Length: 138
Image (tube, rainbow, N blue to C red; front, side, top):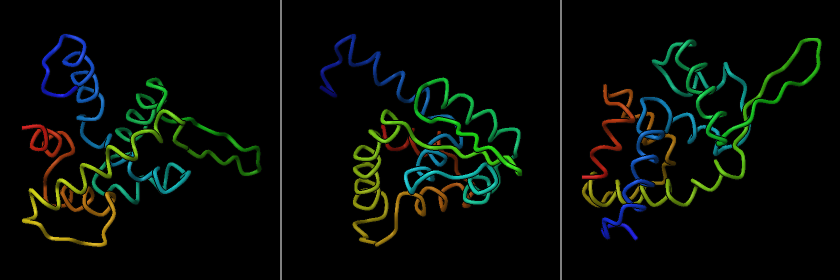
């Protein structure tokens, strides 16, 4: 349970923030919550991220078992990224973080926005996923 400070709990949350706290990672996952997407589409939905960084983050997420890379035979060859069951399991946690953000960071403002819109706005304002996650955890 969070707040117990047991070794296992601390270790688990440390791993969560080490992965999801990296800049852009959370936004990529949130983008894929809407369904599979091509590399170029993810890049469009997460403004300000270079193709090199997107490629690096997608590789990390695949290695962590959160996304899969699907290659469809062409021509032209089409590559799409999709959340795995493990990645999809983040949906309730991200929805709860969005709710908390609206209540605690936006002064109780209720909006019909999605996590994607909120996260993209944070980055567009010069913030980062890592900074946002850090603020949420304090």
